[in-house]
View 1 (cartoon, rainbow, N blue to C red):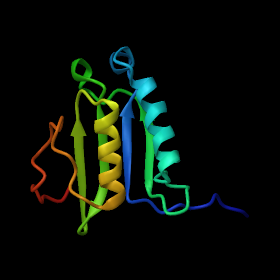
View 2: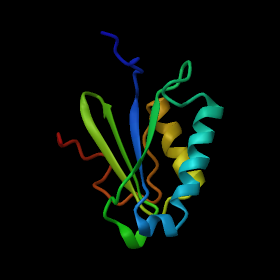
View 3: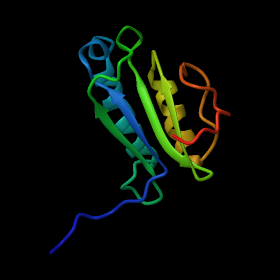
Length: 120
């Protein structure tokens, strides 16, 4: 039996494509971000890439969209970050920070503080 190829990742970005976020151009944002990840060699399946991007159903911040959710393991702890009102420069900065293992941007973030070390 053959299996799909596994690609290691440093983090996973979920971009809301619920109806409210779509009205705020999340479909175009997803396409632009995906193209940038591919072009920059950051997409998980590219040589040296490590970031997954998935479009998502409603993430629950409808009036503040587009919404972006990030999950990654950092220091043995699951880190999550939630962003509202995401535009292309912010989405790209988040993806690059995930890829490089840096602190995530604070702009647009609406979850718990970055230094919150609770295990989720």
